[in-house]
Structures are given as structure tokens and as C-alpha cells.
Image (tube, rainbow, N blue to C red):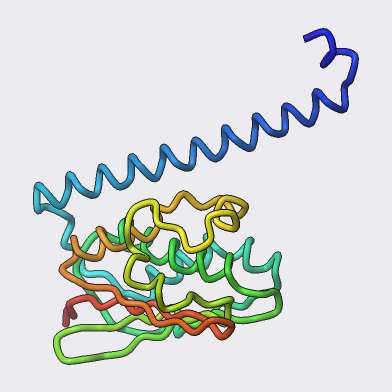
Length: 200
């Protein structure tokens, strides 16, 4: 409108709002499409069955999340030499740990650390993604993997969440015949535990 032309600062603010909302919509569409694609794979019951080192998958995820972590001076610690292997699709498993590590970074205070631990159990390997963040109260934990469920809607929107990330994670893990659980203490941090069938 003519008023916007006369007020360049107001025009800039409006354009910034439009850009932010466009970016949010793109992230939402991308997540919806990802979830639909994963559901199709589950229906077809066919995924790649490559032998994959879990540490290499975590390495990629940590690299993707590094810029955001570094901006908050958060370290991501894991044993890059771990030899544990699972069968599956490396791209999908990378998406799992990108989501989990990214969430850990988002909800952690600056100057803290995130650890990824690898544990061996009979017939399976456990991967624990542990942060020292704000934590999640117990009443939210049973619904955490539901689509569009958000513990703190305002904060999630501010941080760019769609409420689909953990639903995508759960679907991918189920696709790999695994499971995921979460433990958390408000003010102390959260641990996500991924269990995947072991491959020798």
C-alpha cells in the first residue's frame, strides 16, 4: 500500500514477518512430506539393509548440528571409534540422530554439553542422547512422540519446531525394528534411549 512505501522501516518489518512465516511453512511441509514418505516405507515393509556403524551415523548428525551447538558453546561428546553396527538405511538413521541432537541443543543452556553413549545389550545396541537442558515434566512424557504435540507451544514456535520431529524419529526407529524411550528431570536434563537390533 501507499503507507508501506512511505514507511520503509514498517515495510522491512512486514517483509521480515512474511519471510519468517514462509520459512516456518516450508519446515512444516518438509516434515509432513518426510513423515508421509516414512509411512509409505513402513507400509511397503522395504528399506535398505546396509550394515552401518552407529558411530558414523552419529558423526554425521553431530556435524550437521555443530554450527548451532557452537553458537551456544555446547559440546557434543561421543566415542567416534565405537564399532557397533546395525542394519538399515543410513540416511534415515542420520535423520533420527540429527533430530535428537538438534533438540538437545535447542533446549540446553549455553556452555553445557551433550553426550551420545553407546551400550551393548543382548541382541541389541542402545544409543543414549543425553543433555543437561531444561528437562520435561513427567506428565508430558507419554505424549512426547505424538504428531504435533508440543510441551511448550510458544517456545517450540520460537525455536522453529513443527511438533513432528519426534514422531518422525519414532517411525524411523520402528521401521528398523527398534524402539525409543525418554527419561527426563525438570531443570536437570533429558535422555533419549534408542534401541536397535545388533548386527555382528
